[in-house]
Length: 51
Image (cartoon, rainbow, N blue to C red; front, side):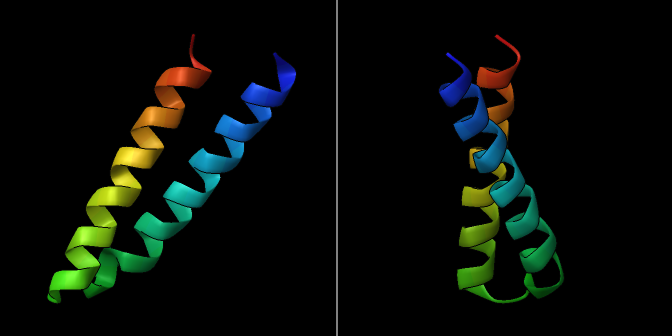
């Protein structure tokens, strides 16, 4: 059980880092897509961490 929590914590950190990285590049299409994927990854991991 702890390994899953650690995995979700790492995914949350990666997602939030990607959100911060792509936040200033939203004028480009690929950055918008990757920003959306990062937000989805972050939300998914936060939901699974809170269970």
